[in-house]
Image (tube, rainbow, N blue to C red; front, side, top):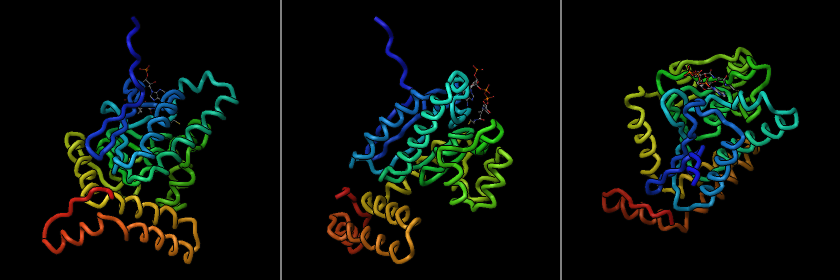
Amino acid sequence: MTAPETPLVLLHRDGPLATLVINRPDARNALSFPTLLQLREKLAELKTDDSVWAVVLTGAGEKAFCAGADLKERRSMSEDEVKEFVRNIRGTMDDIANLPQPTIAAMNGHAFGGGCEMALACDLRLLASSALIGLTETSLGIIPGAGGCVRLPRLVGAAKAKQLILTAKRCTAEEAKRMGLVHEIAESANFAEATATMVQSLLANGPLALRAAKDAIDGSLDRPLELALEHEASCYQRMIPTEDRLEALAAFAEKRKPKFQGR
Ligand code: COA
């Protein structure tokens, strides 16, 4: 009997929270083609699962959240295979960005290249205080091709994004926090606790409201103001017939915390 292969991506469930773990610590959680495929499979599962209210994305081990694309695998790829890989890694980041649930990149270690792009596709970002983060692709003769050239400028502004991408800078956690690339930083010793606090700050709120607010924000970015406001209104409308809205009003009147059901 052959031993079962270790999964490259783990999916843990804890009530309404789903945690995805890139599980290649010996390769600093680099994204090989099979890793991307396993990740996309799990993301497709989560996307349609209404019982999942929030998603955490993290890496196994303590050295790296994700060291980006697998550069060893890349060496043996033909040009066509590289094109196919880039299409897939970009698709993976889009899958993450398009999850209806709020997402947290819990970066327990370094995040470079595709690892940083993965975090950029999440809604909230937490980085270990000893970790470095950056889009380092130009130092490898390529460019960020999984959304990095698009999402980073939208997050920190074009001037800062150009500086980071054109110099392939590895930023410290403090620098990343100052420029708004990450929301929070935490010591490695407290990282699990800091992640749990961030998760709890989401799960305390109505799960349908979290999805609708994410949709209202993401769906407004590329629309002219009038249409963006209409989109926000349609997201609000979805909340009006929900039990969670009535429960929150009852809880307010009764001076207690609401018990949201996601209905
Ligand atoms: N692809 C494939 N393998 C990788 C990798 C990557 N992106 N990053 C690290 N690894 C491998 C190393 O080759 C090494 O393998 P080995 O034990 O067979 O030699 C193993 O992971 C450990 O790496 P190492 O550099 O020894 O670990 P470290 O903890 O000292 O440093 C990093 C970790 C992430 C800082 C460093 O590996 C690094 O800079 N990697 C490249 C990051 C990068 O530029 N990514 C952009 C890709 S587009």
